Image (cartoon, rainbow, N blue to C red; front, top):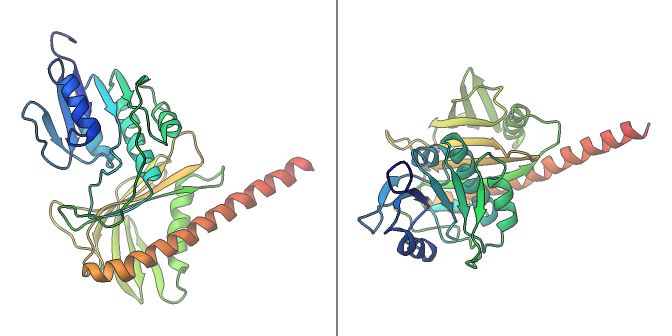
Length: 305
């Protein structure tokens, strides 16, 4: 009991193996809350519609929570198309949990041990102020990735992580990202910027229109809403976003596309648009590694003088 009421505990789901067992162990003595895209099967669990990969959703779910239990179901998906490694998916979800718990003054995070990514997950969760406890019993699980899912809406999530030069700010990385797109296909690709609006163009056509939501100087997160363009479907209650996030205490940045709904047929997206984007991001990753290496070399030469 806490303050005359049952301890309120947040779970990331109760439909999978881990969630069902946690439910059976906790529901009689605790007030259980679940954050999930889909309605849960138990009537005595308070369901908060939300996405564990979206920080704002997790922060909302953490309101009035005493203990947040973190585990990521290896098969957990929230989009029809998930273009990400399980390692990056877990890192993003763990970072959301750590940030949200700290912001909402959650008393404790309990981490369910047993995943290949345990060490990195704990490092991320402990980057923030909320105390983290690890279960003594491990539940062995291994991350799996299936690219195209049978989710309930035709949207896309993309998560990629990049190592950056130590001296770079998030503002510099974001500017470099858009400059890279501008020059990825010389003479065809371009980026036009008008105040807070960014137009990603191809052959002088506006393919994606982004609207910047955060200040340029924000070195923590940069958020752009997908506001239009020939390659995007826009719905009143379904706004996609492009997010750049600095991972606390690291030289890494997450680039995430959330809830993006392509306007072209799925076959076009799967066979042309998605492979092209994946290729350009792999090249960009190599570019980032070169920039990081060059900065380290310059620093080494300076120190040796």
